Length: 471
Image (tube, rainbow, N blue to C red; front, top):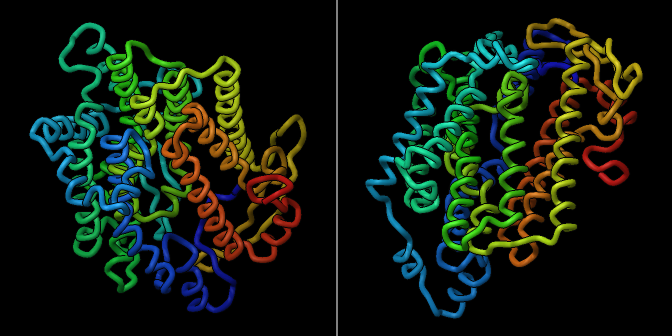
Protein backbone atom coordinates (compact mmCIF):
# COMPACT_ATOMS: atom_id res chain seq x y z
CA UNK A 1 0.00 0.00 0.00
CA UNK A 2 0.98 3.61 -0.35
CA UNK A 3 1.51 4.26 3.35
CA UNK A 4 4.51 2.90 5.17
CA UNK A 5 3.31 0.34 7.68
CA UNK A 6 3.07 1.57 11.27
CA UNK A 7 1.41 -0.14 14.26
CA UNK A 8 -2.17 1.02 14.63
CA UNK A 9 -5.19 0.73 16.87
CA UNK A 10 -8.54 2.41 17.47
CA UNK A 11 -8.15 5.70 19.33
CA UNK A 12 -9.61 4.75 22.71
CA UNK A 13 -7.89 4.59 26.07
CA UNK A 14 -4.09 4.35 26.18
CA UNK A 15 -4.18 0.80 27.53
CA UNK A 16 -6.59 -0.49 24.95
CA UNK A 17 -4.70 1.34 22.22
CA UNK A 18 -1.45 -0.41 23.06
CA UNK A 19 -3.14 -3.78 23.46
CA UNK A 20 -4.89 -3.51 20.14
CA UNK A 21 -1.81 -2.25 18.38
CA UNK A 22 0.24 -5.20 19.53
CA UNK A 23 -1.50 -7.42 17.03
CA UNK A 24 -0.90 -5.05 14.13
CA UNK A 25 2.81 -5.61 13.63
CA UNK A 26 4.98 -8.64 13.17
CA UNK A 27 3.67 -12.09 13.83
CA UNK A 28 0.95 -13.08 16.30
CA UNK A 29 1.12 -12.61 20.06
CA UNK A 30 -1.05 -15.65 20.70
CA UNK A 31 -1.21 -18.93 18.79
CA UNK A 32 -4.52 -20.44 17.73
CA UNK A 33 -4.81 -24.14 17.01
CA UNK A 34 -4.74 -23.72 13.22
CA UNK A 35 -1.57 -21.63 13.31
CA UNK A 36 0.12 -24.13 15.61
CA UNK A 37 -0.93 -27.04 13.38
CA UNK A 38 0.45 -25.22 10.33
CA UNK A 39 3.73 -24.52 12.11
CA UNK A 40 4.13 -28.14 13.19
CA UNK A 41 3.29 -29.38 9.71
CA UNK A 42 5.93 -27.17 8.10
CA UNK A 43 8.58 -27.96 10.70
CA UNK A 44 8.00 -31.68 10.21
CA UNK A 45 7.41 -31.91 6.48
CA UNK A 46 9.09 -28.98 4.68
CA UNK A 47 12.56 -30.63 4.90
CA UNK A 48 11.10 -33.87 3.54
CA UNK A 49 9.39 -32.01 0.70
CA UNK A 50 12.75 -30.58 -0.38
CA UNK A 51 14.39 -34.00 -0.04
CA UNK A 52 11.59 -35.67 -2.02
CA UNK A 53 11.97 -33.34 -5.01
CA UNK A 54 15.75 -33.57 -5.09
CA UNK A 55 15.70 -37.35 -4.56
CA UNK A 56 13.10 -37.78 -7.31
CA UNK A 57 15.44 -36.13 -9.80
CA UNK A 58 18.50 -38.02 -8.59
CA UNK A 59 16.94 -41.49 -8.48
CA UNK A 60 13.78 -41.31 -10.62
CA UNK A 61 14.66 -38.85 -13.43
CA UNK A 62 12.40 -36.17 -11.87
CA UNK A 63 9.25 -38.32 -11.72
CA UNK A 64 7.12 -37.50 -8.71
CA UNK A 65 4.85 -40.51 -9.04
CA UNK A 66 7.43 -43.27 -9.63
CA UNK A 67 8.88 -43.31 -6.08
CA UNK A 68 5.40 -43.22 -4.56
CA UNK A 69 4.24 -46.13 -6.74
CA UNK A 70 7.40 -48.11 -5.99
CA UNK A 71 6.86 -47.66 -2.27
CA UNK A 72 3.15 -48.50 -2.49
CA UNK A 73 3.86 -51.66 -4.51
CA UNK A 74 6.63 -52.77 -2.18
CA UNK A 75 9.29 -52.69 -4.87
CA UNK A 76 11.46 -50.48 -2.69
CA UNK A 77 11.62 -49.45 0.93
CA UNK A 78 12.36 -46.03 2.34
CA UNK A 79 15.66 -47.43 3.58
CA UNK A 80 16.55 -48.40 0.00
CA UNK A 81 15.93 -44.85 -1.24
CA UNK A 82 17.90 -43.39 1.65
CA UNK A 83 20.80 -45.78 1.06
CA UNK A 84 21.15 -44.48 -2.51
CA UNK A 85 21.18 -40.85 -1.38
CA UNK A 86 24.63 -39.22 -1.45
CA UNK A 87 25.80 -38.27 2.03
CA UNK A 88 27.63 -35.22 3.33
CA UNK A 89 31.18 -35.04 2.01
CA UNK A 90 34.27 -33.14 3.05
CA UNK A 91 34.43 -31.51 -0.37
CA UNK A 92 30.84 -30.23 -0.13
CA UNK A 93 31.43 -28.92 3.40
CA UNK A 94 34.52 -27.02 2.21
CA UNK A 95 32.68 -25.60 -0.81
CA UNK A 96 29.74 -24.45 1.28
CA UNK A 97 31.85 -22.98 4.07
CA UNK A 98 33.91 -21.06 1.50
CA UNK A 99 30.76 -19.87 -0.25
CA UNK A 100 29.06 -18.52 2.87
CA UNK A 101 32.30 -16.97 4.16
CA UNK A 102 32.83 -15.24 0.83
CA UNK A 103 29.33 -13.78 0.89
CA UNK A 104 29.78 -12.57 4.48
CA UNK A 105 33.04 -10.92 3.38
CA UNK A 106 31.34 -9.17 0.46
CA UNK A 107 28.48 -8.08 2.72
CA UNK A 108 30.58 -6.79 5.61
CA UNK A 109 33.95 -5.70 4.24
CA UNK A 110 33.22 -4.03 0.90
CA UNK A 111 31.14 -0.82 1.08
CA UNK A 112 29.10 -0.27 -2.04
CA UNK A 113 30.64 1.68 -4.92
CA UNK A 114 28.09 0.80 -7.61
CA UNK A 115 25.84 3.74 -6.66
CA UNK A 116 28.66 6.13 -7.58
CA UNK A 117 28.66 5.24 -11.28
CA UNK A 118 25.32 3.50 -12.03
CA UNK A 119 22.62 6.14 -12.74
CA UNK A 120 19.41 5.46 -10.87
CA UNK A 121 20.86 2.81 -8.58
CA UNK A 122 20.45 3.38 -4.83
CA UNK A 123 23.16 1.73 -2.77
CA UNK A 124 25.43 2.45 0.14
CA UNK A 125 24.10 3.21 3.60
CA UNK A 126 20.29 3.43 3.60
CA UNK A 127 17.62 3.64 6.29
CA UNK A 128 14.91 1.07 6.79
CA UNK A 129 11.36 1.65 7.95
CA UNK A 130 10.57 2.59 11.53
CA UNK A 131 10.22 -0.54 13.66
CA UNK A 132 7.37 -0.88 16.18
CA UNK A 133 9.87 0.09 18.91
CA UNK A 134 10.62 3.31 17.04
CA UNK A 135 14.03 2.21 15.78
CA UNK A 136 15.26 3.17 12.31
CA UNK A 137 17.92 0.66 11.31
CA UNK A 138 20.65 1.52 8.84
CA UNK A 139 21.77 -0.97 6.19
CA UNK A 140 24.75 -1.27 3.88
CA UNK A 141 23.10 -1.87 0.51
CA UNK A 142 25.71 -3.69 -1.56
CA UNK A 143 23.89 -6.73 -2.90
CA UNK A 144 24.27 -5.76 -6.55
CA UNK A 145 28.00 -5.33 -6.03
CA UNK A 146 28.23 -8.74 -4.33
CA UNK A 147 26.29 -10.36 -7.19
CA UNK A 148 28.51 -8.75 -9.85
CA UNK A 149 31.77 -9.68 -8.12
CA UNK A 150 30.60 -13.25 -7.55
CA UNK A 151 29.51 -13.78 -11.14
CA UNK A 152 32.54 -12.09 -12.66
CA UNK A 153 34.74 -14.45 -10.68
CA UNK A 154 32.59 -17.40 -11.75
CA UNK A 155 32.86 -16.45 -15.42
CA UNK A 156 36.59 -15.72 -15.12
CA UNK A 157 37.09 -19.17 -13.64
CA UNK A 158 35.04 -20.86 -16.36
CA UNK A 159 36.87 -18.99 -19.12
CA UNK A 160 40.44 -18.57 -17.90
CA UNK A 161 41.32 -19.80 -14.41
CA UNK A 162 39.85 -23.33 -14.24
CA UNK A 163 40.10 -23.50 -10.45
CA UNK A 164 36.99 -25.68 -10.41
CA UNK A 165 34.61 -27.11 -13.05
CA UNK A 166 31.48 -25.03 -13.75
CA UNK A 167 29.42 -28.15 -12.98
CA UNK A 168 30.68 -28.14 -9.38
CA UNK A 169 27.30 -27.17 -7.89
CA UNK A 170 25.36 -29.87 -9.74
CA UNK A 171 28.06 -32.47 -9.02
CA UNK A 172 27.73 -31.81 -5.27
CA UNK A 173 24.05 -30.92 -5.25
CA UNK A 174 22.80 -33.37 -2.60
CA UNK A 175 25.87 -33.18 -0.30
CA UNK A 176 25.47 -29.39 -0.44
CA UNK A 177 21.84 -29.86 0.62
CA UNK A 178 23.01 -31.29 3.95
CA UNK A 179 25.36 -28.33 4.40
CA UNK A 180 22.52 -25.89 3.70
CA UNK A 181 20.33 -27.68 6.26
CA UNK A 182 23.05 -27.48 8.89
CA UNK A 183 23.39 -23.73 8.37
CA UNK A 184 19.63 -23.21 8.23
CA UNK A 185 18.99 -24.97 11.52
CA UNK A 186 22.08 -23.46 13.16
CA UNK A 187 21.17 -19.86 12.34
CA UNK A 188 17.51 -20.39 13.28
CA UNK A 189 18.46 -21.91 16.64
CA UNK A 190 20.98 -19.16 17.31
CA UNK A 191 18.39 -16.50 16.46
CA UNK A 192 15.94 -17.99 18.95
CA UNK A 193 18.53 -18.21 21.74
CA UNK A 194 19.61 -14.66 20.98
CA UNK A 195 16.02 -13.44 21.16
CA UNK A 196 15.70 -14.85 24.68
CA UNK A 197 19.11 -14.00 26.09
CA UNK A 198 20.58 -11.00 24.27
CA UNK A 199 18.16 -9.44 21.77
CA UNK A 200 19.24 -6.49 19.66
CA UNK A 201 16.15 -4.59 20.81
CA UNK A 202 13.91 -6.17 23.44
CA UNK A 203 10.95 -3.95 22.51
CA UNK A 204 10.97 -5.42 19.00
CA UNK A 205 10.59 -9.00 20.27
CA UNK A 206 7.47 -11.13 20.51
CA UNK A 207 6.95 -14.19 22.71
CA UNK A 208 3.90 -16.45 22.53
CA UNK A 209 4.76 -19.03 25.19
CA UNK A 210 4.76 -21.71 22.48
CA UNK A 211 8.24 -23.03 21.69
CA UNK A 212 7.45 -24.30 18.19
CA UNK A 213 5.75 -21.09 17.07
CA UNK A 214 8.55 -18.94 18.48
CA UNK A 215 11.16 -21.12 16.79
CA UNK A 216 9.53 -21.07 13.39
CA UNK A 217 8.17 -17.53 13.15
CA UNK A 218 10.97 -15.91 15.13
CA UNK A 219 11.24 -13.75 18.22
CA UNK A 220 13.38 -10.82 17.15
CA UNK A 221 12.20 -8.38 14.54
CA UNK A 222 15.68 -7.33 13.39
CA UNK A 223 18.37 -9.51 14.98
CA UNK A 224 21.85 -8.11 14.43
CA UNK A 225 25.45 -8.85 15.33
CA UNK A 226 27.31 -5.61 15.78
CA UNK A 227 26.21 -2.50 13.96
CA UNK A 228 25.89 -3.83 10.40
CA UNK A 229 25.35 -7.58 10.23
CA UNK A 230 21.59 -7.82 9.87
CA UNK A 231 20.35 -11.42 9.84
CA UNK A 232 17.20 -10.67 7.88
CA UNK A 233 18.81 -8.72 5.05
CA UNK A 234 21.80 -11.05 4.75
CA UNK A 235 19.92 -14.34 4.67
CA UNK A 236 17.04 -12.99 2.56
CA UNK A 237 19.47 -11.76 -0.09
CA UNK A 238 22.73 -13.56 0.50
CA UNK A 239 23.73 -16.38 0.15
CA UNK A 240 20.53 -17.87 -1.35
CA UNK A 241 19.56 -15.36 -4.03
CA UNK A 242 23.15 -14.68 -5.16
CA UNK A 243 23.48 -18.46 -5.54
CA UNK A 244 20.25 -18.77 -7.57
CA UNK A 245 21.80 -17.63 -10.85
CA UNK A 246 25.06 -19.52 -10.18
CA UNK A 247 23.07 -22.70 -9.65
CA UNK A 248 21.32 -22.19 -12.99
CA UNK A 249 24.65 -21.61 -14.72
CA UNK A 250 26.00 -24.82 -13.22
CA UNK A 251 22.93 -26.70 -14.45
CA UNK A 252 23.45 -25.27 -17.94
CA UNK A 253 27.09 -26.38 -17.84
CA UNK A 254 26.01 -29.89 -16.82
CA UNK A 255 23.50 -30.03 -19.65
CA UNK A 256 26.28 -29.05 -22.04
CA UNK A 257 28.55 -31.73 -20.59
CA UNK A 258 25.94 -34.51 -20.75
CA UNK A 259 24.16 -33.69 -24.01
CA UNK A 260 26.65 -31.64 -25.99
CA UNK A 261 24.53 -28.50 -26.16
CA UNK A 262 22.47 -26.09 -24.09
CA UNK A 263 18.79 -26.06 -25.06
CA UNK A 264 16.78 -22.91 -25.63
CA UNK A 265 14.58 -23.84 -22.66
CA UNK A 266 17.64 -23.79 -20.37
CA UNK A 267 18.64 -20.43 -21.83
CA UNK A 268 15.13 -19.07 -21.17
CA UNK A 269 15.15 -20.26 -17.56
CA UNK A 270 18.58 -18.74 -16.98
CA UNK A 271 17.67 -15.41 -18.59
CA UNK A 272 14.22 -14.93 -17.07
CA UNK A 273 15.30 -15.89 -13.56
CA UNK A 274 18.44 -13.74 -13.87
CA UNK A 275 16.21 -10.75 -14.68
CA UNK A 276 14.25 -11.41 -11.50
CA UNK A 277 17.41 -11.76 -9.38
CA UNK A 278 19.01 -8.63 -10.84
CA UNK A 279 15.80 -6.71 -10.23
CA UNK A 280 15.94 -7.76 -6.58
CA UNK A 281 19.46 -6.46 -6.14
CA UNK A 282 18.91 -3.30 -8.18
CA UNK A 283 15.98 -2.48 -5.89
CA UNK A 284 17.51 -3.77 -2.66
CA UNK A 285 17.04 -0.38 -0.96
CA UNK A 286 13.35 -0.45 -1.90
CA UNK A 287 13.19 -4.00 -0.48
CA UNK A 288 13.82 -2.53 2.98
CA UNK A 289 10.22 -1.24 2.91
CA UNK A 290 8.58 -4.54 1.93
CA UNK A 291 6.67 -7.05 4.03
CA UNK A 292 9.74 -9.29 4.50
CA UNK A 293 11.70 -6.59 6.32
CA UNK A 294 8.86 -4.48 7.74
CA UNK A 295 6.69 -7.31 9.08
CA UNK A 296 8.33 -10.74 9.37
CA UNK A 297 10.40 -11.74 12.35
CA UNK A 298 13.54 -13.80 11.86
CA UNK A 299 13.10 -17.45 12.76
CA UNK A 300 13.22 -20.84 11.08
CA UNK A 301 10.73 -19.66 8.45
CA UNK A 302 13.30 -17.21 7.07
CA UNK A 303 16.55 -18.75 8.34
CA UNK A 304 16.05 -22.29 7.10
CA UNK A 305 13.82 -21.16 4.24
CA UNK A 306 16.46 -18.86 2.76
CA UNK A 307 19.24 -21.43 3.16
CA UNK A 308 17.39 -24.50 1.90
CA UNK A 309 13.91 -23.94 0.48
CA UNK A 310 14.83 -21.02 -1.79
CA UNK A 311 17.99 -22.33 -3.51
CA UNK A 312 16.71 -25.91 -3.82
CA UNK A 313 13.09 -25.45 -4.88
CA UNK A 314 13.31 -22.18 -6.81
CA UNK A 315 15.83 -23.80 -9.18
CA UNK A 316 13.83 -26.94 -10.02
CA UNK A 317 13.35 -25.89 -13.65
CA UNK A 318 17.08 -25.85 -14.35
CA UNK A 319 17.59 -29.12 -12.49
CA UNK A 320 14.79 -30.78 -14.45
CA UNK A 321 16.27 -29.63 -17.75
CA UNK A 322 19.57 -31.35 -16.93
CA UNK A 323 17.72 -34.68 -16.81
CA UNK A 324 15.20 -33.85 -19.55
CA UNK A 325 16.67 -31.40 -22.07
CA UNK A 326 13.81 -29.65 -23.86
CA UNK A 327 14.29 -27.86 -27.16
CA UNK A 328 11.24 -25.69 -27.67
CA UNK A 329 9.72 -24.85 -31.03
CA UNK A 330 10.34 -21.22 -31.94
CA UNK A 331 6.72 -20.07 -31.33
CA UNK A 332 6.66 -21.82 -27.94
CA UNK A 333 9.99 -20.28 -26.93
CA UNK A 334 8.85 -16.84 -28.07
CA UNK A 335 5.60 -17.19 -26.13
CA UNK A 336 7.45 -18.17 -22.95
CA UNK A 337 9.84 -15.25 -23.35
CA UNK A 338 7.01 -12.77 -23.92
CA UNK A 339 5.03 -14.12 -20.96
CA UNK A 340 8.07 -13.85 -18.72
CA UNK A 341 8.82 -10.31 -19.85
CA UNK A 342 5.15 -9.33 -19.46
CA UNK A 343 5.14 -10.69 -15.92
CA UNK A 344 8.30 -8.79 -15.09
CA UNK A 345 6.90 -5.59 -16.64
CA UNK A 346 3.71 -5.77 -14.56
CA UNK A 347 5.67 -6.64 -11.42
CA UNK A 348 8.21 -3.84 -11.82
CA UNK A 349 5.91 -1.08 -13.09
CA UNK A 350 3.30 -1.79 -10.40
CA UNK A 351 5.95 -1.52 -7.70
CA UNK A 352 7.36 1.61 -9.32
CA UNK A 353 3.93 3.26 -9.40
CA UNK A 354 3.41 2.58 -5.71
CA UNK A 355 6.87 3.83 -4.81
CA UNK A 356 6.48 6.98 -6.94
CA UNK A 357 3.09 7.72 -5.39
CA UNK A 358 4.50 7.28 -1.89
CA UNK A 359 7.64 9.36 -2.48
CA UNK A 360 5.73 12.28 -4.01
CA UNK A 361 2.71 12.08 -1.70
CA UNK A 362 0.54 11.65 -4.78
CA UNK A 363 1.94 14.65 -6.65
CA UNK A 364 2.83 12.68 -9.77
CA UNK A 365 1.36 11.27 -12.96
CA UNK A 366 0.43 7.61 -13.38
CA UNK A 367 -0.43 6.52 -16.90
CA UNK A 368 -0.38 10.22 -17.81
CA UNK A 369 -2.99 11.26 -15.28
CA UNK A 370 -3.15 12.56 -11.75
CA UNK A 371 -3.58 9.45 -9.57
CA UNK A 372 -6.75 8.63 -7.68
CA UNK A 373 -6.32 7.96 -3.98
CA UNK A 374 -8.35 7.06 -0.91
CA UNK A 375 -7.52 9.30 2.05
CA UNK A 376 -7.09 7.38 5.31
CA UNK A 377 -6.64 8.15 8.97
CA UNK A 378 -5.11 5.71 11.44
CA UNK A 379 -3.83 5.77 15.01
CA UNK A 380 -0.35 4.51 15.94
CA UNK A 381 0.63 2.75 19.16
CA UNK A 382 1.61 6.03 20.82
CA UNK A 383 -1.94 7.37 20.36
CA UNK A 384 -1.03 9.77 17.55
CA UNK A 385 -3.36 10.15 14.59
CA UNK A 386 -1.79 9.94 11.13
CA UNK A 387 -3.01 10.63 7.61
CA UNK A 388 -2.22 8.43 4.65
CA UNK A 389 -3.35 7.68 1.11
CA UNK A 390 -4.06 4.43 -0.71
CA UNK A 391 -3.32 4.42 -4.43
CA UNK A 392 -6.26 3.51 -6.68
CA UNK A 393 -4.79 4.29 -10.12
CA UNK A 394 -2.60 2.56 -12.66
CA UNK A 395 -2.09 -1.11 -11.95
CA UNK A 396 -3.32 -0.45 -8.41
CA UNK A 397 -6.67 0.58 -9.83
CA UNK A 398 -7.02 -2.79 -11.57
CA UNK A 399 -6.31 -4.93 -8.51
CA UNK A 400 -5.04 -4.36 -5.00
CA UNK A 401 -1.97 -6.59 -5.44
CA UNK A 402 -1.28 -6.62 -9.16
CA UNK A 403 2.46 -6.72 -8.47
CA UNK A 404 1.86 -10.26 -7.18
CA UNK A 405 -0.02 -11.05 -10.39
CA UNK A 406 3.04 -10.04 -12.40
CA UNK A 407 5.19 -12.25 -10.19
CA UNK A 408 2.86 -15.19 -10.87
CA UNK A 409 3.00 -14.63 -14.65
CA UNK A 410 6.80 -14.75 -14.50
CA UNK A 411 6.68 -17.89 -12.36
CA UNK A 412 4.40 -19.57 -14.91
CA UNK A 413 6.82 -18.68 -17.71
CA UNK A 414 9.71 -20.45 -15.94
CA UNK A 415 7.60 -23.60 -15.72
CA UNK A 416 6.25 -23.48 -19.28
CA UNK A 417 9.83 -23.35 -20.54
CA UNK A 418 10.15 -26.97 -19.39
CA UNK A 419 7.36 -28.29 -21.60
CA UNK A 420 4.62 -30.59 -20.33
CA UNK A 421 6.41 -33.88 -19.75
CA UNK A 422 6.47 -33.84 -15.93
CA UNK A 423 4.75 -32.18 -13.00
CA UNK A 424 7.94 -31.38 -11.10
CA UNK A 425 8.85 -28.08 -12.84
CA UNK A 426 5.35 -26.76 -12.12
CA UNK A 427 5.73 -27.01 -8.37
CA UNK A 428 7.19 -23.50 -8.37
CA UNK A 429 4.16 -21.72 -9.83
CA UNK A 430 1.80 -23.73 -7.61
CA UNK A 431 3.83 -22.83 -4.54
CA UNK A 432 4.04 -19.15 -5.53
CA UNK A 433 0.28 -19.04 -6.07
CA UNK A 434 -0.31 -20.31 -2.53
CA UNK A 435 2.43 -18.10 -1.03
CA UNK A 436 1.33 -14.87 -2.70
CA UNK A 437 -2.38 -15.48 -2.12
CA UNK A 438 -1.66 -16.08 1.56
CA UNK A 439 0.57 -13.00 1.69
CA UNK A 440 -2.16 -10.98 -0.03
CA UNK A 441 -4.74 -12.05 2.57
CA UNK A 442 -2.32 -11.40 5.46
CA UNK A 443 -1.61 -7.92 4.16
CA UNK A 444 -5.29 -7.15 3.72
CA UNK A 445 -6.11 -8.34 7.22
CA UNK A 446 -3.54 -5.92 8.64
CA UNK A 447 -4.76 -3.09 6.44
CA UNK A 448 -8.38 -3.69 7.47
CA UNK A 449 -7.36 -3.53 11.13
CA UNK A 450 -5.22 -0.48 10.54
CA UNK A 451 -7.52 1.65 8.37
CA UNK A 452 -10.97 0.39 9.42
CA UNK A 453 -13.74 2.05 7.41
CA UNK A 454 -11.23 3.74 5.11
CA UNK A 455 -10.05 0.31 3.99
CA UNK A 456 -13.66 -0.63 3.20
CA UNK A 457 -13.90 2.45 0.99
CA UNK A 458 -10.68 1.43 -0.77
CA UNK A 459 -11.84 -2.13 -1.43
CA UNK A 460 -15.08 -0.75 -2.83
CA UNK A 461 -13.07 1.43 -5.23
CA UNK A 462 -10.70 -1.44 -6.15
CA UNK A 463 -12.78 -4.60 -5.66
CA UNK A 464 -10.32 -7.24 -6.93
CA UNK A 465 -7.25 -8.59 -5.17
CA UNK A 466 -5.11 -10.35 -7.80
CA UNK A 467 -7.06 -11.06 -10.98
CA UNK A 468 -9.25 -8.23 -12.33
CA UNK A 469 -12.80 -9.47 -12.83
CA UNK A 470 -12.12 -12.80 -11.08
CA UNK A 471 -10.46 -12.55 -7.65
